[in-house]
Image (cartoon, rainbow, N blue to C red; front, top):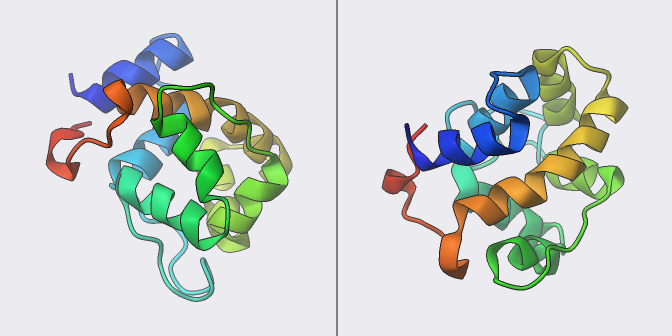
Length: 133
């Protein structure tokens, strides 16, 4: 079991929920939803590094960096997530999770900070090759 599976399993209660599957794809770099139209027409870079980069590009890097660091995690709102991920990508991930986009964003805003925090022990981002799913 890789680091991502351990972190998400602990967060989501061990089962394989639709939200856990979406987070695995988002943070593990496996499923790059969205394609044209997402993130201003370009597909989003994958994995944890891609998420952190997307937050930086959206002017919200300080929020994502709080999840990586050793201090308290700053919250992220559903609207902020929408601006980072883009409407097409949110729609696709919500559909994959079997949820309405607003419900999906609300749950993602609760789980993403803890997931990123759990994947960055010691306040450092692991190499992409070490984040196995």
